Image 1 (cartoon, rainbow, N blue to C red):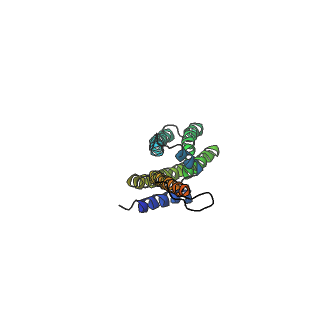
Image 2: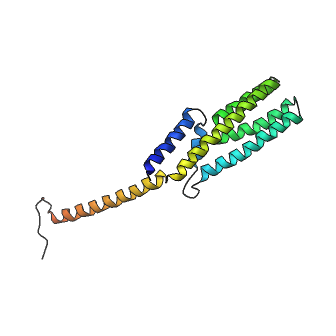
Image 3: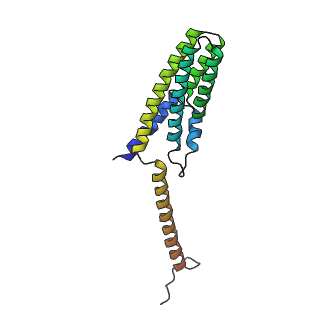
Length: 183
């Protein structure tokens, strides 16, 4: 299997998420928290995000039906969702949350409904794109391990070269003349 191609594909998918504005710098900060002790940290955070955000969207839809024109209640639900979006760097979703909240401030039911539909669409798009990204990253071994192994090999090779050079220098006298080893 061509792991370098899979790594390039994963990098391209991730770049697209940033270039298209789906993710922002906060996502990179979440990635920085991943280490050898928790190698699936980012994926686990994203899974929890989609579980919670799905629940919050469902709660909001119920509140829209049960409490028509209760903009304060709607805004409170959306504030929670906006915080979740901000915490993982879901930029386009966060922007739709802010749009919804602006519509609450303007007491626009139609604006809130329109923002909610856009938010749900962004939620589905982000979920699909991140699922594709994580699927590719699971198929390819992490670059860090491969790079780390290459680094270890390079260090070992450099150590061997240094040892060989030191042996040669011992055989060469201080004036640079070769000395014969004692027999």
